[in-house]
Length: 158
Picture 1 (tube, rainbow, N blue to C red):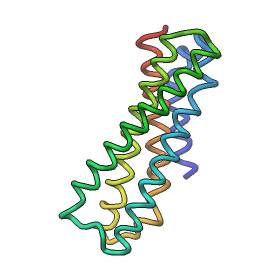
Picture 2: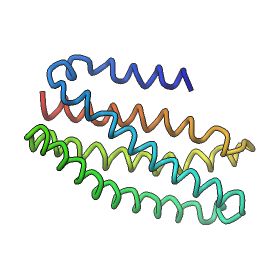
Picture 3: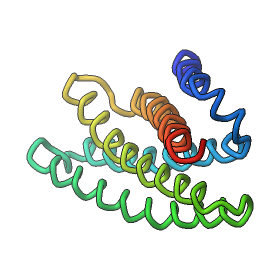
Picture 4: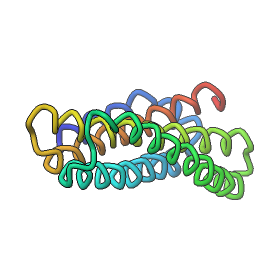
């Protein structure tokens, strides 16, 4: 976990110049990562439970993926809009608000993909999905959350 946290911090390091030019990014980026991690962990819990109860198999895994992706996009639009409104209220920047919203939508999409795929992959490999899935999910949603938010900010704000 410490190694994955270090790697995620290096993603932020790539965007040091972007953060220096718009300090508001430093205050908002943890929100994107946090929302993605929380959402993804809920998806993992559903998948691990489904695997443990033999309710998820190769036959319905595609359905589960589509369902979770759909839920993530709806949640992403709802929470992303709320976070965008929050960012606009504080920083009075419509572009920053749109970047915030887009990053939340995209990171929740990533969280759904990882939340379904990682437990399935671990289960297929004969490993216990409950033991490693959350660490991998946190690493990916943190790294991607930072990358998406700061990358979009670099493209559209600075």
